[in-house]
Image (cartoon, rainbow, N blue to C red; front, top):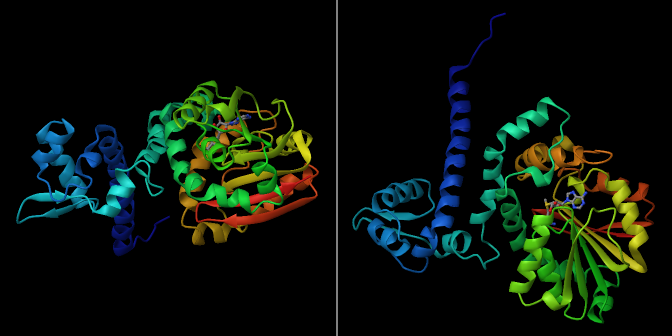
Amino acid sequence: MSVDVNEERLQEFGGHVAGYLTGAVLSFAIWLGDELGLYRAMAGQGPMTADGVAKRSGCHPTLVRQWIDGQAAGGLVTYDGTTDTYELSPEAALTLADDTSPAFMARAIQAFGSLYRDLDKLADAYRGDGGLSWSDHDAALFEGTEWFFRGGYRAELPAWLAMLDGTHTTLSNGGRIADVGCGHGASCVVMAEAYPGAHVYGFDFHAASIEIAAQRCAEAGVADRTSFAVADAKSYGGTFDLICFFDCLHDMGDPVGIARYARQRLSPEGSVLLVEPFALDDRAANMTENPLAALGYTAGATVCTPNSLSQEVGLGLGPQAGEARLRAVFDEAGYSRFRRVAETPLNLILEAKP
Ligand SMILES: C[S@@+](CC[C@H](N)C(=O)[O-])C[C@H]1O[C@@H](n2cnc3c(N)ncnc32)[C@H](O)[C@@H]1O
């Protein structure tokens, strides 16, 4: 069968793919720049020569010149040909150099970079039973995930907590919070800072992440009101006024069983705070209208769903489930109330009550 190929569309499609290839290599260059302190060397310095950036960062001048020309060609730094100098704009500095800024994105790239290192393991999962546990990924995934979500939690989480039914009053007077699947504990730090009288218990089945979460809380000066334990989402002990799942329920094998277990662990007036990646309920609409859908589905196909398939039940919900599918999980788990509290371009913020 002969196929008619439209030359113009072929070129256009090639350009589309070349854009992704360029994005991949520039993403790597951002990771490298963050690792080497190249952006930090430029932040707030005004126009600099490539040699000046190399000197300030202690890196090889020939390599830095090539790296920085790539950055200028990619629109990440500005270049002035008359003075042969480069500059990091204040906006670029907040995004690439200042890791205390909510706009900081440079380190999140590690989450996606880790996938290149895990290609063989992922190919085996695709050809086999689909399972690849979170804990069997390259460690860059764990740090990248922390930085991917951290800015949003810092900027928005206190407001989300204040919107939950009765939770703000309870936590302002003490109270117990469980952060299930807490990873590196970015959300634990924010909650411990927001409610100094409450106690935050972080649980995760990944022992290395629990160690880092405790370290992050110690660095933030909130170790006295946080505790951590290695535990599966169906095995932690205690009773809580608030049980949180931050960007993790869809990663788990048995979301219904896990929601049911959380219900048994809630105090009578307690709430579940479910934060999930933003997605529209209609899959076709989600693919075309949600700008983060390509990232979400691909992260699902390489990290979240393989982890889910490696666990009991193996539902494979994925990070683009959407509110209606998540509501069905909590209905099946026996909750009487479920509502959308807020949304951001990145997240759906949902509350479930027993
Ligand atoms: C995408 S990460 C989110 C981490 C953290 N909540 C955040 O927002 O940065 C998913 C987390 O769920 C954890 N996890 C996956 N399955 C789990 C299970 N069955 N029980 C407990 N933790 C689990 C992983 O170890 C990982 O830390």
